[in-house]
Image (cartoon, rainbow, N blue to C red; front, top):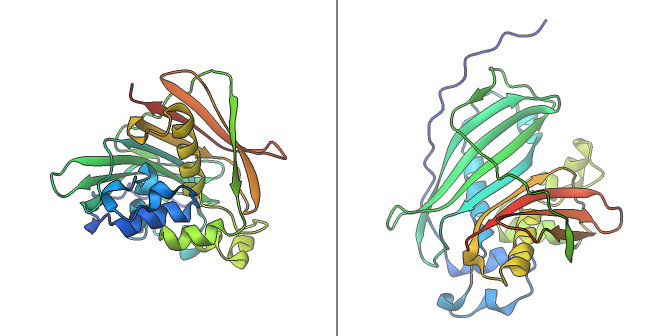
Length: 284
């Protein structure tokens, strides 16, 4: 007999803690992605470019503070995996700026794979209250059911994919140690990415690479190829994760050449398995 559903919980916007984007944090994030480019490690903070994808570092810090509205067990909570990352970039980052990331629930639904939730992270400057990034983060809790009816509290419109031909751009190496380095440098730790026993307990053959690593590496590759490395032109970047990537893999990044919305994908260079697909939008 199926248990009766409870009412949709009363969600509220959760204010994050104020923090400062320091020179050290910006360099560590680049190092966690194994970026081999001296510009990201300048001794003078004013000359150091900041990867736009650093928002994921601040968003992760908020996830552990979201109340357990659905009363999931500890095991159910740990079954969650990153299904999609979709970020709109309102402007660039500034070293020394005080920022805060707020969180709000967007939607939740049950699927054949489990419960799917979407939360929106808004990171803004506390200097002038201007938004820096807005992210719609989708999570799948495998084999878990929401105890309430499906809900949609605010609209979310993913970028529409184009129908263009994919062209090979570059190969991206994902070495065996990247997940451990990134966990510490980006301060994004989940044992499924670093502990073999935990990963195998969830039916995986071993630890898997963070989705935010794949999203950021693909993003940098797309910006380098399409905008000659001009990160300020990036308006929105999304990625949907369909198959886990294991450390030690070699990936192939492919993108379209059309505008205004570009398609991209990451696939295994040897097997051809597609791991991530997404869209990118640029300012003219």
